Length: 275
Image (cartoon, rainbow, N blue to C red; front, side):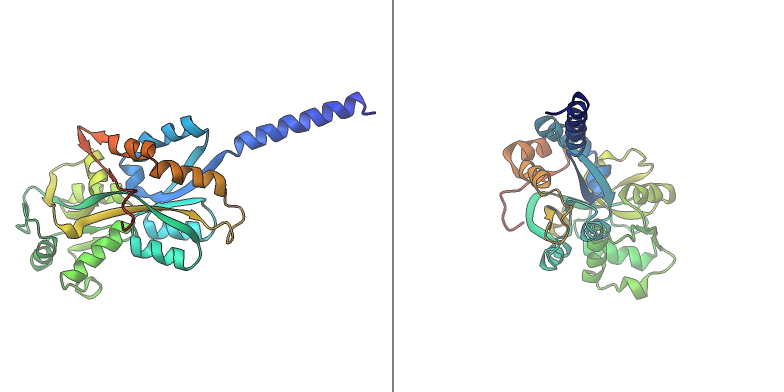
């Protein structure tokens, strides 16, 4: 027969285990500074927690850093925007499956004075060529993020080898989207930004959208569960619950409903299998 003391110890152990389990109902998502800086997570994650009780801790980094965080097993889910890098992550066995979630677009931001003479253009390649030709100040995130990768690819399409051709006009800051916009605002420079962060950005100064609407500025986001076979610590059930919610009609509506001053920041497209 168990003594009173043993019964109390067993009960205390059960209570402690219950608390540990409750505290453990959380996941880490490695994501981009754009999803964080735009305010999207602040809008949708409380809805997800209210529905599931799962607390989501976001590590906001550039896409390259976020994928590296996931490769180390320091995240359960990765939510980024650089499809070739995401597909490489999967092919290496670090992710289970990629789900398209949403898209928006990149915009080229610049000073109202428009020293490169590109304002109103819909041709991003011609605009970048003009910036280089005139030596107009340009801020690059320089952080291996999805936005940085998109920027480098656009320079390449424009026939500019930025590694060789950059001069004093091209400044790499190695920081996130908000910091890049702040630097551009302070120095009246051009910068490539995702539309979501731009719409939520308060410190605009003399900055305006210089170029938008080019199909080459399309910006797709995808989400993946980190492979628990690589990292057994991955909370696969909780992580998959977040993914399932993001691509569900409820999650997609939550994304579509996020607006600033009436402008929608992200467009859900989980049903587009090719995105």
